[in-house]
Length: 243
Image (cartoon, rainbow, N blue to C red):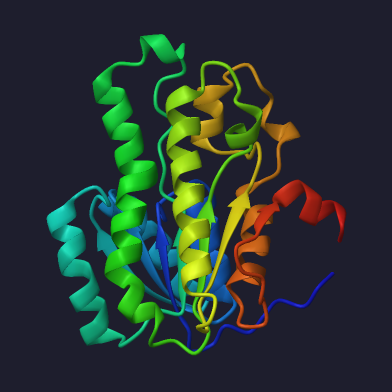
């Protein structure tokens, strides 16, 4: 078992932090010493997360908002700049499944909402937070993606297209910041025991899937200054098999 990185004194923004992989990542990052800035839509779930983190001796700040709220996101960067001065870790986890149906049956509202959360909001956040990443001595950005961007699984069109756009954006940004201390990588968790997975695969036994806590262990590793990959897509199952 690899020793958990020491993230003491580092500031970590986690989106979609109220449940699933985001929640587990927030708790694991806090346990490793990071001050977690947990962003999600649900105030109550964030407060429960905050209680758990603080009960374990960790530090957290809560932001109850929607990442597709452009006005709120425009206010976020100045607020973080004033309070923290920099961002060391960004876990771009928030995402939606969209409707599972043939590409030709996807309505425009679904296209817009799925791309809006999974791609456009992450692009906007990246652009707004870039000055904060550049204030860090070793900013580490992790964008969560999916294996369907290469398998092109039938009926997963909206989700797949939105994540493919996210991948292209993140990898382009990785090349643009290659000469800086910023490192940008992608993580494909694969099937995980989350509500989104249950919605997509209702007949599946969740006990056969990895728990989000297991994926969060990899996220902590990717968030550490010692993790120097840039522009890499890491598959959780391959990582776990190599341990």
